[in-house]
Length: 252
Length: 357
View 1 (spheres, chains in turn cyan, blue):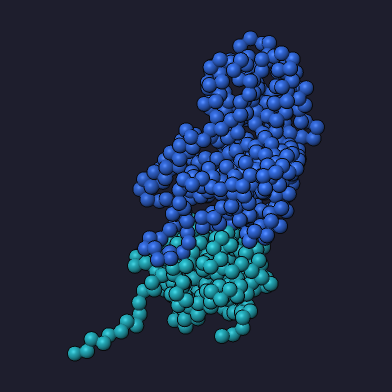
View 2 (tube, each protein chain N blue to C red):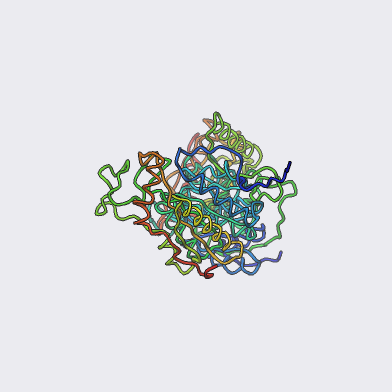
Protein backbone atom coordinates (compact mmCIF):
# COMPACT_ATOMS: atom_id res chain seq x y z
CA UNK A 1 0.00 0.00 0.00
CA UNK A 2 1.49 3.27 -1.03
CA UNK A 3 1.43 6.35 1.21
CA UNK A 4 3.00 8.48 -1.44
CA UNK A 5 0.33 11.17 -1.54
CA UNK A 6 1.32 14.66 -2.53
CA UNK A 7 -0.79 17.71 -1.91
CA UNK A 8 -1.80 19.29 -5.21
CA UNK A 9 -3.96 22.10 -3.87
CA UNK A 10 -3.41 23.87 -0.58
CA UNK A 11 -4.36 27.02 1.24
CA UNK A 12 -1.67 29.66 0.67
CA UNK A 13 0.36 30.27 3.85
CA UNK A 14 -0.35 33.99 3.46
CA UNK A 15 -4.05 33.31 3.95
CA UNK A 16 -5.62 32.35 7.28
CA UNK A 17 -7.78 29.28 7.73
CA UNK A 18 -10.93 31.25 8.37
CA UNK A 19 -14.36 31.70 6.81
CA UNK A 20 -14.89 35.07 5.16
CA UNK A 21 -17.81 37.41 5.79
CA UNK A 22 -18.31 37.96 2.08
CA UNK A 23 -21.74 37.38 0.50
CA UNK A 24 -22.43 34.25 -1.58
CA UNK A 25 -21.01 34.73 -5.07
CA UNK A 26 -18.77 37.62 -4.05
CA UNK A 27 -15.35 37.32 -5.66
CA UNK A 28 -13.26 39.10 -3.01
CA UNK A 29 -12.41 35.72 -1.46
CA UNK A 30 -11.09 34.48 -4.79
CA UNK A 31 -9.08 37.65 -5.38
CA UNK A 32 -7.71 37.41 -1.83
CA UNK A 33 -6.54 33.91 -2.66
CA UNK A 34 -4.84 34.98 -5.88
CA UNK A 35 -3.11 37.78 -3.98
CA UNK A 36 -1.98 35.37 -1.26
CA UNK A 37 -0.73 32.95 -3.94
CA UNK A 38 1.44 35.73 -5.35
CA UNK A 39 2.92 36.44 -1.91
CA UNK A 40 3.62 32.76 -1.40
CA UNK A 41 5.18 32.53 -4.84
CA UNK A 42 7.78 35.13 -3.94
CA UNK A 43 8.05 33.94 -0.32
CA UNK A 44 7.28 37.39 1.02
CA UNK A 45 4.51 36.73 3.56
CA UNK A 46 6.91 37.56 6.39
CA UNK A 47 7.92 40.90 4.88
CA UNK A 48 4.62 42.04 3.40
CA UNK A 49 2.57 44.90 4.82
CA UNK A 50 -0.97 45.18 3.49
CA UNK A 51 -2.88 48.44 3.42
CA UNK A 52 -6.61 47.94 3.80
CA UNK A 53 -9.15 50.38 2.45
CA UNK A 54 -12.68 51.28 3.47
CA UNK A 55 -15.46 49.10 2.09
CA UNK A 56 -16.05 45.37 1.96
CA UNK A 57 -12.31 44.74 1.81
CA UNK A 58 -11.56 46.53 5.08
CA UNK A 59 -11.15 43.20 6.90
CA UNK A 60 -7.97 42.36 5.01
CA UNK A 61 -6.27 41.58 8.31
CA UNK A 62 -8.89 38.98 9.19
CA UNK A 63 -8.00 36.89 6.16
CA UNK A 64 -4.36 37.57 5.34
CA UNK A 65 -1.77 36.37 7.80
CA UNK A 66 0.36 39.49 7.45
CA UNK A 67 0.85 42.87 9.13
CA UNK A 68 -1.80 45.36 8.04
CA UNK A 69 -2.47 49.09 8.28
CA UNK A 70 -6.04 50.26 7.84
CA UNK A 71 -6.31 53.43 5.76
CA UNK A 72 -9.02 56.09 5.70
CA UNK A 73 -11.40 55.95 2.74
CA UNK A 74 -9.48 56.39 -0.51
CA UNK A 75 -6.16 57.10 1.18
CA UNK A 76 -4.56 53.66 0.97
CA UNK A 77 -2.01 54.69 -1.70
CA UNK A 78 -0.86 57.62 0.47
CA UNK A 79 -0.68 55.43 3.59
CA UNK A 80 1.18 52.79 1.57
CA UNK A 81 3.59 55.46 0.36
CA UNK A 82 4.40 56.33 3.99
CA UNK A 83 4.81 52.66 4.85
CA UNK A 84 7.04 51.90 1.87
CA UNK A 85 9.23 54.95 2.41
CA UNK A 86 9.64 54.04 6.09
CA UNK A 87 10.30 50.36 5.31
CA UNK A 88 11.71 50.19 1.78
CA UNK A 89 12.54 46.50 2.13
CA UNK A 90 8.95 45.49 2.85
CA UNK A 91 6.52 44.45 0.16
CA UNK A 92 3.57 46.83 0.37
CA UNK A 93 0.25 46.49 -1.38
CA UNK A 94 -3.10 48.22 -1.29
CA UNK A 95 -6.39 46.44 -1.86
CA UNK A 96 -9.16 48.85 -2.80
CA UNK A 97 -12.65 48.91 -4.22
CA UNK A 98 -14.02 51.20 -6.94
CA UNK A 99 -15.59 53.85 -4.72
CA UNK A 100 -12.44 53.96 -2.63
CA UNK A 101 -9.93 54.09 -5.46
CA UNK A 102 -11.78 55.73 -8.35
CA UNK A 103 -13.93 58.30 -6.52
CA UNK A 104 -12.82 59.57 -3.12
CA UNK A 105 -9.25 58.34 -3.58
CA UNK A 106 -8.60 59.29 -7.21
CA UNK A 107 -5.98 61.84 -6.28
CA UNK A 108 -4.04 59.46 -4.05
CA UNK A 109 -3.87 56.60 -6.58
CA UNK A 110 -2.95 58.87 -9.50
CA UNK A 111 -0.11 60.52 -7.62
CA UNK A 112 1.24 57.36 -6.01
CA UNK A 113 1.37 55.84 -9.50
CA UNK A 114 2.84 58.98 -11.00
CA UNK A 115 5.59 59.13 -8.38
CA UNK A 116 6.38 55.57 -9.35
CA UNK A 117 6.12 54.39 -5.76
CA UNK A 118 7.30 50.81 -5.41
CA UNK A 119 3.82 49.59 -4.54
CA UNK A 120 1.32 47.06 -5.80
CA UNK A 121 -2.31 48.17 -6.04
CA UNK A 122 -5.10 45.60 -6.34
CA UNK A 123 -8.23 47.36 -7.54
CA UNK A 124 -11.49 45.44 -7.35
CA UNK A 125 -14.08 46.89 -9.72
CA UNK A 126 -17.60 45.60 -9.15
CA UNK A 127 -19.38 48.73 -10.43
CA UNK A 128 -20.95 49.56 -7.08
CA UNK A 129 -20.40 50.55 -3.46
CA UNK A 130 -20.82 47.19 -1.79
CA UNK A 131 -20.49 47.94 1.92
CA UNK A 132 -22.91 50.87 1.97
CA UNK A 133 -25.59 48.99 0.10
CA UNK A 134 -25.18 49.40 -3.64
CA UNK A 135 -24.88 53.07 -4.57
CA UNK A 136 -23.68 54.30 -7.95
CA UNK A 137 -19.91 54.04 -8.26
CA UNK A 138 -17.51 55.83 -10.62
CA UNK A 139 -17.42 52.54 -12.52
CA UNK A 140 -21.20 51.94 -12.66
CA UNK A 141 -22.10 51.15 -16.27
CA UNK A 142 -24.34 53.46 -18.34
CA UNK A 143 -27.96 52.57 -17.67
CA UNK A 144 -27.07 50.45 -14.62
CA UNK A 145 -29.65 50.72 -11.87
CA UNK A 146 -28.28 51.30 -8.40
CA UNK A 147 -29.59 52.62 -5.10
CA UNK A 148 -28.67 56.18 -6.14
CA UNK A 149 -29.30 55.84 -9.87
CA UNK A 150 -32.80 54.34 -9.70
CA UNK A 151 -33.51 55.15 -13.35
CA UNK A 152 -30.15 53.80 -14.40
CA UNK A 153 -26.89 55.72 -14.74
CA UNK A 154 -27.55 58.67 -17.02
CA UNK A 155 -24.23 59.63 -18.56
CA UNK A 156 -25.46 63.18 -19.23
CA UNK A 157 -26.13 63.70 -15.54
CA UNK A 158 -23.76 61.29 -13.86
CA UNK A 159 -20.86 61.10 -16.31
CA UNK A 160 -19.18 57.98 -17.61
CA UNK A 161 -17.59 54.99 -15.96
CA UNK A 162 -13.86 55.52 -15.41
CA UNK A 163 -11.48 53.04 -17.01
CA UNK A 164 -8.83 53.15 -14.31
CA UNK A 165 -6.37 50.64 -15.78
CA UNK A 166 -6.07 52.82 -18.88
CA UNK A 167 -5.82 56.00 -16.79
CA UNK A 168 -2.98 54.53 -14.72
CA UNK A 169 -1.22 53.18 -17.81
CA UNK A 170 -1.15 56.71 -19.23
CA UNK A 171 1.02 57.93 -16.34
CA UNK A 172 4.75 57.94 -16.95
CA UNK A 173 5.38 56.88 -13.36
CA UNK A 174 3.38 53.65 -13.61
CA UNK A 175 5.27 50.58 -14.77
CA UNK A 176 2.53 47.97 -15.00
CA UNK A 177 -1.20 48.27 -15.50
CA UNK A 178 -3.63 45.51 -16.43
CA UNK A 179 -7.29 44.64 -16.29
CA UNK A 180 -8.36 41.09 -15.55
CA UNK A 181 -11.53 39.28 -14.54
CA UNK A 182 -12.30 36.24 -12.40
CA UNK A 183 -15.51 35.09 -14.11
CA UNK A 184 -14.20 31.82 -15.61
CA UNK A 185 -11.24 29.46 -15.10
CA UNK A 186 -9.26 30.91 -18.00
CA UNK A 187 -9.66 34.45 -16.72
CA UNK A 188 -8.88 33.37 -13.16
CA UNK A 189 -5.58 31.87 -14.32
CA UNK A 190 -4.87 35.08 -16.21
CA UNK A 191 -5.74 37.18 -13.16
CA UNK A 192 -3.44 35.08 -10.99
CA UNK A 193 -0.58 35.66 -13.41
CA UNK A 194 -1.22 39.37 -13.54
CA UNK A 195 -1.28 39.70 -9.74
CA UNK A 196 1.91 37.68 -9.50
CA UNK A 197 3.53 39.93 -12.08
CA UNK A 198 2.39 42.99 -10.13
CA UNK A 199 4.18 41.64 -7.04
CA UNK A 200 7.20 40.75 -9.16
CA UNK A 201 7.45 44.40 -10.19
CA UNK A 202 7.76 45.35 -6.55
CA UNK A 203 9.99 42.49 -5.43
CA UNK A 204 12.40 43.35 -8.24
CA UNK A 205 12.03 47.09 -7.53
CA UNK A 206 10.86 47.80 -11.06
CA UNK A 207 8.06 50.25 -10.33
CA UNK A 208 4.43 50.87 -9.55
CA UNK A 209 2.09 48.04 -10.53
CA UNK A 210 -1.70 48.19 -10.86
CA UNK A 211 -4.15 45.34 -11.34
CA UNK A 212 -7.82 46.06 -11.95
CA UNK A 213 -9.96 43.01 -11.30
CA UNK A 214 -13.53 42.93 -12.59
CA UNK A 215 -15.71 41.24 -10.01
CA UNK A 216 -19.31 40.41 -9.26
CA UNK A 217 -21.46 41.82 -6.46
CA UNK A 218 -24.57 39.61 -6.58
CA UNK A 219 -26.12 41.09 -3.43
CA UNK A 220 -26.10 44.68 -4.61
CA UNK A 221 -26.80 43.82 -8.21
CA UNK A 222 -29.92 41.93 -7.08
CA UNK A 223 -28.81 38.79 -8.87
CA UNK A 224 -28.01 35.20 -8.06
CA UNK A 225 -24.28 34.38 -7.92
CA UNK A 226 -24.50 32.68 -11.32
CA UNK A 227 -26.41 35.55 -12.95
CA UNK A 228 -23.95 38.03 -11.49
CA UNK A 229 -20.99 36.06 -12.75
CA UNK A 230 -22.57 35.99 -16.20
CA UNK A 231 -23.07 39.74 -16.12
CA UNK A 232 -19.31 40.24 -15.71
CA UNK A 233 -18.76 38.59 -19.07
CA UNK A 234 -21.85 39.95 -20.80
CA UNK A 235 -21.82 43.59 -19.66
CA UNK A 236 -18.62 44.53 -17.84
CA UNK A 237 -15.95 43.07 -20.08
CA UNK A 238 -17.39 44.73 -23.23
CA UNK A 239 -17.04 48.13 -21.52
CA UNK A 240 -13.92 47.41 -19.47
CA UNK A 241 -11.66 45.72 -21.97
CA UNK A 242 -9.39 43.05 -20.49
CA UNK A 243 -5.73 43.40 -21.27
CA UNK A 244 -2.27 44.61 -20.42
CA UNK A 245 -2.11 48.35 -20.93
CA UNK A 246 1.43 48.75 -19.75
CA UNK A 247 4.20 46.30 -18.96
CA UNK A 248 7.33 48.37 -18.95
CA UNK A 249 9.66 45.53 -18.12
CA UNK A 250 8.52 43.75 -21.29
CA UNK A 251 6.87 40.39 -21.83
CA UNK A 252 7.90 37.46 -19.72
CA UNK B 1 26.10 72.33 17.71
CA UNK B 2 25.60 74.07 21.03
CA UNK B 3 26.76 77.57 20.11
CA UNK B 4 24.22 80.29 19.48
CA UNK B 5 22.91 80.63 15.95
CA UNK B 6 20.55 83.19 14.47
CA UNK B 7 17.70 81.28 12.85
CA UNK B 8 14.01 81.68 12.03
CA UNK B 9 11.40 79.84 14.09
CA UNK B 10 10.31 77.65 11.21
CA UNK B 11 13.90 76.53 10.64
CA UNK B 12 14.22 75.80 14.36
CA UNK B 13 11.24 73.44 14.05
CA UNK B 14 12.91 71.61 11.17
CA UNK B 15 16.24 71.46 13.02
CA UNK B 16 14.51 70.20 16.16
CA UNK B 17 12.75 67.48 14.19
CA UNK B 18 15.99 66.25 12.69
CA UNK B 19 17.68 66.40 16.10
CA UNK B 20 14.81 64.32 17.49
CA UNK B 21 15.50 61.61 14.92
CA UNK B 22 12.69 62.44 12.51
CA UNK B 23 13.74 61.24 9.06
CA UNK B 24 10.39 61.33 7.27
CA UNK B 25 8.64 64.52 6.23
CA UNK B 26 5.46 64.77 4.16
CA UNK B 27 3.95 68.13 3.26
CA UNK B 28 2.25 70.45 0.84
CA UNK B 29 3.16 74.09 0.16
CA UNK B 30 1.33 76.78 2.12
CA UNK B 31 2.36 80.16 3.55
CA UNK B 32 3.64 80.94 6.19
CA UNK B 33 5.30 77.60 6.90
CA UNK B 34 7.05 77.00 3.59
CA UNK B 35 10.54 77.37 5.11
CA UNK B 36 10.00 74.05 6.89
CA UNK B 37 9.54 71.86 3.76
CA UNK B 38 12.24 73.85 1.95
CA UNK B 39 14.72 73.10 4.74
CA UNK B 40 13.59 69.50 5.07
CA UNK B 41 13.85 68.82 1.34
CA UNK B 42 17.53 69.66 1.58
CA UNK B 43 18.52 68.37 4.99
CA UNK B 44 16.64 65.07 4.94
CA UNK B 45 18.41 64.14 1.76
CA UNK B 46 21.70 64.89 3.49
CA UNK B 47 20.92 62.63 6.46
CA UNK B 48 19.38 59.85 4.39
CA UNK B 49 15.73 60.58 5.12
CA UNK B 50 12.57 60.86 3.06
CA UNK B 51 11.00 64.10 1.90
CA UNK B 52 7.80 63.99 -0.12
CA UNK B 53 5.94 66.98 -1.43
CA UNK B 54 2.56 65.31 -1.56
CA UNK B 55 -0.29 65.99 -3.96
CA UNK B 56 -2.43 67.34 -1.12
CA UNK B 57 -2.62 67.96 2.60
CA UNK B 58 -4.82 64.89 2.78
CA UNK B 59 -2.21 62.70 1.16
CA UNK B 60 0.57 64.10 3.34
CA UNK B 61 -1.21 63.36 6.64
CA UNK B 62 -1.92 59.84 5.40
CA UNK B 63 1.72 59.34 4.42
CA UNK B 64 2.52 60.40 7.98
CA UNK B 65 0.01 57.83 9.23
CA UNK B 66 1.69 55.10 7.15
CA UNK B 67 5.22 56.01 8.25
CA UNK B 68 4.21 56.30 11.91
CA UNK B 69 2.52 52.90 11.67
CA UNK B 70 5.99 51.53 10.86
CA UNK B 71 7.33 52.97 14.11
CA UNK B 72 9.57 55.71 12.68
CA UNK B 73 9.48 59.34 13.80
CA UNK B 74 7.71 61.30 11.10
CA UNK B 75 6.03 64.67 10.63
CA UNK B 76 4.03 67.01 8.48
CA UNK B 77 3.69 70.78 8.64
CA UNK B 78 1.12 73.12 7.27
CA UNK B 79 -0.96 76.17 8.03
CA UNK B 80 -4.59 76.60 9.03
CA UNK B 81 -6.57 75.73 5.84
CA UNK B 82 -4.17 72.87 5.24
CA UNK B 83 -4.56 71.68 8.81
CA UNK B 84 -8.34 71.66 8.30
CA UNK B 85 -7.81 69.19 5.45
CA UNK B 86 -5.64 67.01 7.66
CA UNK B 87 -8.28 66.59 10.35
CA UNK B 88 -9.60 63.32 8.95
CA UNK B 89 -6.11 61.84 9.07
CA UNK B 90 -5.43 63.19 12.56
CA UNK B 91 -8.62 61.51 13.77
CA UNK B 92 -7.53 58.22 12.18
CA UNK B 93 -4.08 58.54 13.72
CA UNK B 94 -5.62 59.15 17.14
CA UNK B 95 -8.01 56.22 16.65
CA UNK B 96 -5.13 54.01 15.51
CA UNK B 97 -3.03 55.12 18.53
CA UNK B 98 -0.28 56.49 16.33
CA UNK B 99 2.30 59.07 17.31
CA UNK B 100 3.47 61.71 14.84
CA UNK B 101 4.03 65.45 14.69
CA UNK B 102 1.72 67.94 12.98
CA UNK B 103 3.07 71.48 12.88
CA UNK B 104 0.54 74.28 12.40
CA UNK B 105 2.09 77.65 11.62
CA UNK B 106 -1.31 79.32 11.79
CA UNK B 107 -2.61 81.92 9.45
CA UNK B 108 -5.81 83.81 9.86
CA UNK B 109 -9.25 82.67 8.80
CA UNK B 110 -12.00 81.70 8.49
CA UNK B 111 -11.71 80.50 4.92
CA UNK B 112 -8.74 81.85 3.06
CA UNK B 113 -8.43 84.69 5.60
CA UNK B 114 -4.93 86.05 5.43
CA UNK B 115 -1.37 85.17 6.35
CA UNK B 116 -0.97 87.28 9.46
CA UNK B 117 -0.08 85.94 12.88
CA UNK B 118 -3.16 84.27 14.29
CA UNK B 119 -4.33 82.20 17.22
CA UNK B 120 -7.70 81.44 15.71
CA UNK B 121 -7.02 77.69 15.59
CA UNK B 122 -6.82 77.13 19.34
CA UNK B 123 -10.22 75.44 19.39
CA UNK B 124 -9.44 73.28 16.36
CA UNK B 125 -6.16 72.12 17.89
CA UNK B 126 -7.07 71.77 21.54
CA UNK B 127 -10.68 70.66 21.26
CA UNK B 128 -9.70 68.57 18.20
CA UNK B 129 -11.04 69.27 14.73
CA UNK B 130 -11.64 65.75 13.54
CA UNK B 131 -14.48 63.38 14.29
CA UNK B 132 -14.62 61.14 17.32
CA UNK B 133 -13.79 61.31 21.02
CA UNK B 134 -10.04 61.80 21.07
CA UNK B 135 -7.36 64.24 22.16
CA UNK B 136 -4.06 65.36 20.74
CA UNK B 137 -1.04 66.72 22.54
CA UNK B 138 -0.78 70.46 21.78
CA UNK B 139 2.35 72.51 22.48
CA UNK B 140 2.61 76.26 21.97
CA UNK B 141 6.11 77.69 21.56
CA UNK B 142 6.66 81.40 22.20
CA UNK B 143 10.26 81.75 21.00
CA UNK B 144 12.62 80.35 18.41
CA UNK B 145 14.36 78.35 21.13
CA UNK B 146 11.04 76.80 22.10
CA UNK B 147 10.26 76.02 18.46
CA UNK B 148 13.31 73.77 18.62
CA UNK B 149 12.89 72.40 22.15
CA UNK B 150 9.14 71.77 21.95
CA UNK B 151 9.47 70.04 18.59
CA UNK B 152 11.75 67.54 20.29
CA UNK B 153 9.42 67.28 23.28
CA UNK B 154 6.46 66.72 20.91
CA UNK B 155 8.10 63.61 19.50
CA UNK B 156 8.91 62.29 22.97
CA UNK B 157 5.41 62.86 24.35
CA UNK B 158 3.79 61.58 21.18
CA UNK B 159 5.77 58.34 21.34
CA UNK B 160 5.15 57.90 25.05
CA UNK B 161 1.39 58.42 24.94
CA UNK B 162 0.80 57.10 21.39
CA UNK B 163 -1.11 60.24 20.46
CA UNK B 164 -0.51 62.65 17.59
CA UNK B 165 1.13 65.89 18.71
CA UNK B 166 0.33 69.34 17.35
CA UNK B 167 2.86 72.14 17.51
CA UNK B 168 0.82 75.33 17.36
CA UNK B 169 2.55 78.57 16.37
CA UNK B 170 2.07 81.34 13.84
CA UNK B 171 4.00 83.48 11.38
CA UNK B 172 5.25 85.75 14.14
CA UNK B 173 7.08 82.94 15.92
CA UNK B 174 7.72 81.02 12.70
CA UNK B 175 9.36 83.74 10.70
CA UNK B 176 11.18 85.89 13.24
CA UNK B 177 14.85 85.21 13.81
CA UNK B 178 16.32 84.78 17.27
CA UNK B 179 19.26 83.15 18.92
CA UNK B 180 18.99 79.41 19.09
CA UNK B 181 21.13 76.94 20.98
CA UNK B 182 20.50 73.70 19.15
CA UNK B 183 21.32 71.17 21.83
CA UNK B 184 21.64 67.58 20.66
CA UNK B 185 18.68 65.47 21.68
CA UNK B 186 18.24 61.84 22.55
CA UNK B 187 14.88 60.23 23.27
CA UNK B 188 14.27 59.44 26.97
CA UNK B 189 15.57 55.98 27.80
CA UNK B 190 12.26 54.94 29.35
CA UNK B 191 10.15 55.42 26.21
CA UNK B 192 8.06 52.29 25.65
CA UNK B 193 9.16 50.01 22.79
CA UNK B 194 7.02 50.29 19.68
CA UNK B 195 5.91 46.68 19.85
CA UNK B 196 2.80 47.57 17.85
CA UNK B 197 4.54 48.83 14.71
CA UNK B 198 4.04 46.99 11.43
CA UNK B 199 7.27 45.55 10.12
CA UNK B 200 6.14 42.51 8.20
CA UNK B 201 5.69 39.47 10.46
CA UNK B 202 9.39 38.57 10.40
CA UNK B 203 8.97 35.30 12.26
CA UNK B 204 6.38 36.61 14.70
CA UNK B 205 3.37 34.35 15.13
CA UNK B 206 1.06 37.27 15.87
CA UNK B 207 -0.01 39.76 13.27
CA UNK B 208 0.34 43.46 13.92
CA UNK B 209 -2.65 45.47 12.85
CA UNK B 210 -2.84 49.25 12.96
CA UNK B 211 -6.50 50.14 12.76
CA UNK B 212 -9.33 52.19 14.18
CA UNK B 213 -12.33 50.04 13.28
CA UNK B 214 -13.85 48.17 16.22
CA UNK B 215 -17.13 46.39 15.56
CA UNK B 216 -17.14 43.69 18.22
CA UNK B 217 -19.46 43.83 21.22
CA UNK B 218 -18.07 46.39 23.67
CA UNK B 219 -14.80 46.78 21.74
CA UNK B 220 -15.19 50.37 20.66
CA UNK B 221 -16.30 51.58 24.05
CA UNK B 222 -13.27 49.93 25.64
CA UNK B 223 -11.04 51.44 22.95
CA UNK B 224 -12.40 54.92 23.65
CA UNK B 225 -11.90 54.47 27.39
CA UNK B 226 -8.33 53.41 26.71
CA UNK B 227 -7.71 56.61 24.72
CA UNK B 228 -9.33 58.57 27.54
CA UNK B 229 -7.14 56.94 30.21
CA UNK B 230 -4.06 57.88 28.23
CA UNK B 231 -5.25 61.48 27.96
CA UNK B 232 -5.88 61.53 31.72
CA UNK B 233 -2.38 60.24 32.35
CA UNK B 234 -1.04 62.97 30.08
CA UNK B 235 -3.03 65.57 32.04
CA UNK B 236 -1.70 64.29 35.34
CA UNK B 237 1.95 64.21 34.31
CA UNK B 238 2.73 66.57 31.47
CA UNK B 239 1.30 70.02 32.21
CA UNK B 240 3.84 72.73 31.48
CA UNK B 241 3.72 76.48 31.87
CA UNK B 242 5.92 79.51 32.40
CA UNK B 243 5.20 81.74 35.36
CA UNK B 244 6.72 85.06 36.37
CA UNK B 245 6.02 87.58 39.15
CA UNK B 246 3.23 85.35 40.50
CA UNK B 247 4.10 85.57 44.23
CA UNK B 248 2.73 89.04 44.89
CA UNK B 249 0.59 89.60 41.78
CA UNK B 250 -2.71 91.43 42.01
CA UNK B 251 -3.43 90.76 38.35
CA UNK B 252 -2.12 87.87 36.26
CA UNK B 253 -1.81 88.28 32.52
CA UNK B 254 -2.06 85.06 30.56
CA UNK B 255 -1.86 84.04 26.92
CA UNK B 256 0.03 81.58 24.75
CA UNK B 257 2.52 81.75 21.91
CA UNK B 258 2.93 85.06 20.14
CA UNK B 259 0.29 86.90 22.21
CA UNK B 260 2.08 85.82 25.39
CA UNK B 261 5.28 87.13 23.91
CA UNK B 262 3.81 90.61 23.55
CA UNK B 263 2.02 90.34 26.90
CA UNK B 264 5.28 89.50 28.66
CA UNK B 265 6.76 92.79 27.50
CA UNK B 266 3.63 94.60 28.68
CA UNK B 267 3.90 92.90 32.09
CA UNK B 268 7.53 94.01 32.41
CA UNK B 269 6.44 97.57 31.57
CA UNK B 270 3.70 97.36 34.22
CA UNK B 271 6.20 96.15 36.83
CA UNK B 272 8.48 99.06 35.97
CA UNK B 273 5.51 101.31 36.55
CA UNK B 274 5.07 99.74 40.00
CA UNK B 275 2.02 97.61 39.25
CA UNK B 276 2.02 94.15 40.82
CA UNK B 277 1.28 92.21 37.68
CA UNK B 278 2.10 88.54 37.15
CA UNK B 279 2.52 86.47 34.00
CA UNK B 280 1.39 82.89 33.38
CA UNK B 281 1.85 81.27 29.99
CA UNK B 282 0.61 77.78 29.10
CA UNK B 283 3.32 75.91 27.21
CA UNK B 284 1.17 72.82 26.87
CA UNK B 285 -2.31 73.72 25.61
CA UNK B 286 -3.31 70.10 25.90
CA UNK B 287 -2.85 69.12 28.62
CA UNK B 288 -3.89 72.58 29.76
CA UNK B 289 -1.83 73.64 32.82
CA UNK B 290 -4.85 73.83 35.09
CA UNK B 291 -2.78 73.07 38.18
CA UNK B 292 -0.66 76.18 37.61
CA UNK B 293 -3.81 78.28 37.23
CA UNK B 294 -5.40 76.79 40.33
CA UNK B 295 -2.26 77.51 42.30
CA UNK B 296 -1.79 81.03 40.97
CA UNK B 297 -5.37 81.96 41.77
CA UNK B 298 -5.07 80.83 45.38
CA UNK B 299 -3.92 84.35 46.08
CA UNK B 300 -4.57 86.43 42.99
CA UNK B 301 -8.22 86.69 42.05
CA UNK B 302 -7.93 88.59 38.81
CA UNK B 303 -6.71 87.41 35.41
CA UNK B 304 -6.47 89.02 32.01
CA UNK B 305 -6.28 86.65 29.07
CA UNK B 306 -4.80 88.02 25.84
CA UNK B 307 -5.22 86.25 22.51
CA UNK B 308 -5.00 86.90 18.79
CA UNK B 309 -8.62 85.85 18.31
CA UNK B 310 -12.03 86.70 19.75
CA UNK B 311 -11.66 84.46 22.79
CA UNK B 312 -10.76 80.77 22.73
CA UNK B 313 -8.15 79.82 25.32
CA UNK B 314 -9.97 82.06 27.77
CA UNK B 315 -12.61 79.33 28.07
CA UNK B 316 -10.00 76.90 29.41
CA UNK B 317 -8.64 79.55 31.74
CA UNK B 318 -12.15 80.03 33.15
CA UNK B 319 -12.63 76.27 33.52
CA UNK B 320 -9.29 76.00 35.33
CA UNK B 321 -10.01 78.70 37.90
CA UNK B 322 -13.67 77.77 38.26
CA UNK B 323 -15.32 80.66 40.12
CA UNK B 324 -12.27 81.41 42.22
CA UNK B 325 -11.09 84.29 40.07
CA UNK B 326 -12.42 86.87 37.68
CA UNK B 327 -11.16 86.36 34.12
CA UNK B 328 -11.15 89.30 31.73
CA UNK B 329 -10.38 88.95 28.05
CA UNK B 330 -8.65 91.13 25.51
CA UNK B 331 -8.36 89.85 21.97
CA UNK B 332 -7.59 91.08 18.50
CA UNK B 333 -8.84 88.89 15.69
CA UNK B 334 -6.04 88.29 13.19
CA UNK B 335 -5.56 90.48 10.14
CA UNK B 336 -3.18 92.97 8.65
CA UNK B 337 -2.46 95.68 11.20
CA UNK B 338 -4.27 93.97 14.04
CA UNK B 339 -1.31 92.78 16.09
CA UNK B 340 -1.56 94.49 19.50
CA UNK B 341 1.41 96.49 20.75
CA UNK B 342 2.85 96.14 24.27
CA UNK B 343 1.56 99.68 24.97
CA UNK B 344 -1.93 98.62 23.96
CA UNK B 345 -1.76 95.66 26.34
CA UNK B 346 -0.35 97.85 29.12
CA UNK B 347 -3.43 100.02 28.75
CA UNK B 348 -5.59 96.91 29.20
CA UNK B 349 -3.54 95.92 32.25
CA UNK B 350 -4.11 99.35 33.80
CA UNK B 351 -7.81 99.13 33.03
CA UNK B 352 -8.24 95.80 34.82
CA UNK B 353 -5.61 96.28 37.53
CA UNK B 354 -7.49 98.86 39.51
CA UNK B 355 -10.86 97.23 39.13
CA UNK B 356 -12.13 95.33 42.20
CA UNK B 357 -12.45 91.57 41.99
